[in-house]
Structures are given as C-alpha cells and as structure tokens.
Length: 325
Image (cartoon, rainbow, N blue to C red; front, top):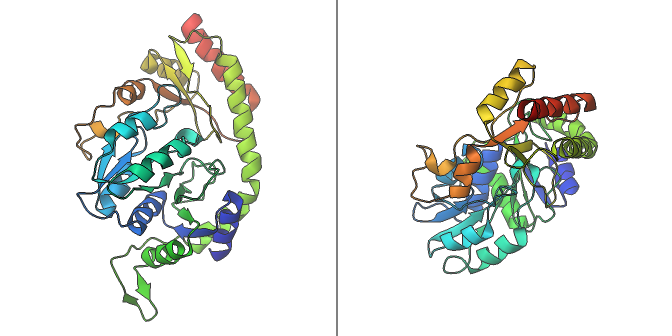
C-alpha cells in the first residue's frame, strides 16, 4: 500500500497519498481534517452525484447544502454556490462529475470568502482519475471496480499536499491509534488493503492508455450523434479537463430509448435518477431546477477502454434509428 500511495500521488501531481477503504471514507477524512464535524456547519455540494458524496458529509457530522448545476456540463454552478454561501458555510465540495473537472478557480475564490474566515475546498474526484490539475486542495478518489482506475472491491485514496494533513489522515484512517493501540481521538476503520493496493499498482501503469482510449471512444460518440436534433438528444458538454469516466447524453423519451437499446442487447444506465436534495436521506428546501430536469433526462451509454469501436458505432446507429427511423 505504501508503494501505491507514493506512485498514485506522483501520477496525480500531489505530494502525499493516503490509501483508505473507499472514496466515501476519503471525503469524510478530508472534511474532518478541516474541522468540519458539527451539524451547524454547512457543506455546499452538487445534487447530481452518487449519494455517497452527501453521506460523507453526514458521517463527518456536518449538513449538506445543495447548489444547482450548469445545464451543459452538469457540473456544480459557481453562481449557484455563491447564492448558497452563508456564515455557516464550512466547506465547498465540488464533484468532478463523469470525469470532468469543475471550475476550481471560481470555486476557490468563493471558498476564500465563505463563512466568517473562509471555507475549505475539498474535491470529490472519485470519477476523475488523472483529470485533476491541482491538488492544492484535498482530493478524494474511489477505486470501485467501475472507475477509470478500479480494483476488485472497495478502495479509495485521499491526496493532499500538506504534511500535517497527511499525518492526521493516516491517523484517522486507522482508528486514530498511536503506538500501543491507544486511540487519540475519534477515528475510522478505513484502510486500503494490501491485495487491492497490489492490483492498483499494476493497473495504474495502464491508466494513461485507458484514459486516452476512453476519450477517443467518446469522440466517436460525439461525431456519430452530433447531427441528432438537440431537442431529442444532447451529449453532456465536455469543456474542461476530462477523462471520460462516463459518456452521458440528455435524452427525450429516455425510458423508451432504453427499452429500444435493451432490445438490441445494449445496456445503458442512469447516473443519477434522483437529485440528492429530493432523496429521503438528505431532506432539503434547496431548489435546483436544472439538476431536477437533468435527472429525468440523463442516460449513460456504454463506454470502457476495451469497447470495440464498431460497438460504439452500433450504439449510435440504434439511437439514430430510434429517433429518426
């Protein structure tokens, strides 16, 4: 694990890597490093993400607040973040959704002005292995098997540049135990196990090639689907650094399209079917109309590094056939 921590941190351009049991654990530890542990503290994040983003906020002890997203990229919208900032804002937690990096410069400027003395900026990079350009702010990664860099079970890492954050993160992940099995504070049982780390060391060597292939296949989708009228189908825009974790479109008559694709042996998924602020676990009065509309339209098409190019074109032809006959 120690070898993988060094190698993954170097690959991403960070000083320190801390292997943990999941991306959720990495986010919780990152929040706790910044003292975000009380219910009155608010963490602004995206409503269009996996529930684990907000679960990590709750696990740390804080309260999630949801800002709306941009209609083209579906990334968290800095303008909506600014509207949500209050004296209780303790952190801003953007999600690099589908492998695309958020506007970190704008979000960092907002974090510096948030709360009473500024807020932490913590990156949910669980879908963005190799895309994040700046680890000045902590970044949480997941190695769930479907990720760009996946292991054969659960795993994660927290990347930081500050040596004291590195020390505390290592303490927290292991029950906050000092030598002698004496816990110094409330900690987690959240370590990356050695077998998964051994596999990840091998897979990491192939990640640049796999990311390039994902991006190439996504480009084929772009070209093949680009002429379909936007009112029927629109690929999610890729404006920033992107590693094509998913290829997502916004589709009219989504359920019928999924049925048509399934009849041709094509699997498609929905990431994500309900925005977090409308889920029972995260009751909220926040209004996020862009996210609410997107959740009813998003559809993830097949994409992984070993997908044959002919299959990409077959999927695109079937979508053309559904909409245009």
